[in-house]
Length: 582
Image (cartoon, rainbow, N blue to C red; front, side, top):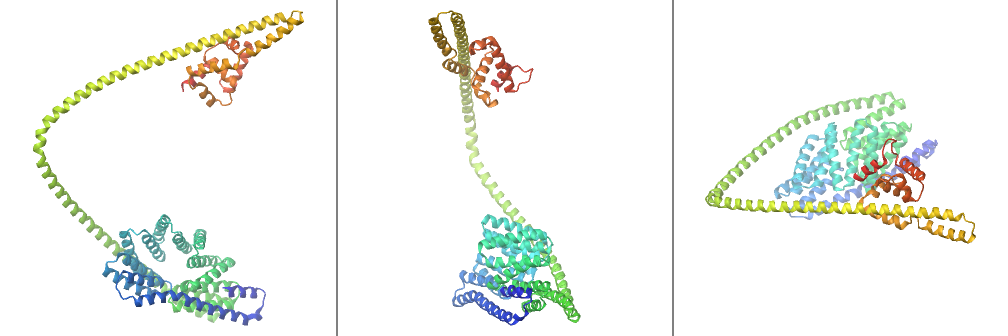
């Protein structure tokens, strides 16, 4: 892919004299790819070497065979089936269910890679059921994802979507972020086929980010490949070029033949659309050879189509016809194959449905038979127990009934006596509370009257002082002034109001709290006026207590009504009583 980027810049600038350098770069990358491919096969070779020295037919050997089959998934599907089948046979002999479940999954995915979708479904369904019986949630989720992939290839998009969504929920519950990302990639691929480009971009972008976070090279390469394919279809060349470049770089690291083939053809398409015909022909022919060597018919068809378009742009009608003829022949062959797969799938589904119904019917019948047996056994035991105890129970019944009647009578008498005591206690408590409330009200009224009387006396003293003050004597005036200060200082002092507020709160509990909750902007003076109104005092009495004139008391009441936002016809006393009772 670095070669592609370099050659792109050179052709952009019209620098054609560097072709020899470009060829050298191509040779270097081919050598690099061979080294990477060799490194990738080392893991399989290591597993094969361990298998060759392991002599026992045990569970460990089953695991080795399954791991080899798993590694061959993206390298050689035939060998994947071969080793998976050996693992399945041995795991069935050993009754090793974990190995049996994985072997069926290995074989199923390998058949999917080959395009044998009915066989893939058959093995994957078996794997799913075994994992379900083992309560292996990870195995269940992975197999469900693989089943969704098969249905997507069968164009059964609703079934594929159902399995993909269930797999995502299961992977989420297990915290397997990487598997969620893989499922997103599969959903994005399916959406591309359905021409739902916006949804496909969203899923594939999320998958790319999640695989990048997990540093999963194969997943990153696959997501870039699908995004490149999508943008190429939309003729967004720069975006397509970027993603295909990244996919090719990463795909070589994991020897992904399928992905590499697709990337070569897509890269050829991008070069064709950029009018770089020679480079496009080279990439497309590489992709065509890989597709033919590995039996990847869908990519072979795609290569013929792109080569046809390339020759059309180059103005070579004879070669256009040749590739078009190959394209039509292969397309018809694949169409017939696709139709035969669909028919075979429908037959397989019908057969599978019949088997499931027969199995369910058999299971239901077995459950019914077991239930009948359990019921008969339970009935026999019940009758035996009843026969043993029935005689004893009948003799004791009369005596127990008599004892129960006597106890009931005693309980009734005790309950009646207790209820009477509770009633008397309640009445006494009610009377006591009433007396206490009456006392508090009397005490509050007396304190209020005393409050009024005291302020009246003080006001009289003030008037007397004012009269004396008019006398001419300077000394008298000084004494009168001092006396007037003392009087003003002691009129309605805070201590009197504190005592009054305490008595008032005892008699009208919660009054101030409810008032402040309903009207938080009321001042302390407003609260005093509210308490005096609640005692049903007239304006003159309120003025006497507050030490103000009746007109000032009326003004204070008017301002209070405005703060409370009362209607003109609403009595403030009624409002306060209602508020207190809430």
